[in-house]
Image (cartoon, rainbow, N blue to C red):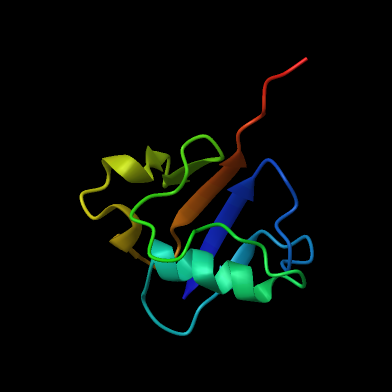
Length: 94
């Protein structure tokens, strides 16, 4: 199963790739756990047992739909060919 990835940063562990191959159907939560394991420094997208992603840190869409608008949220089942867009939100300051 191939999941396409769009981001506004280089996703650690993808080696510049734009997709990840998974062996079986997976939820958005499992997808982020897999991305984290692929990262050499174990990037953290989710806090353990979190019900949502931190909205101050991340903007995530599944096929251009905010994941929060999906009925199952982080437990949304991804399908072959889906595109997950991951954006780091810019911090303000001065």
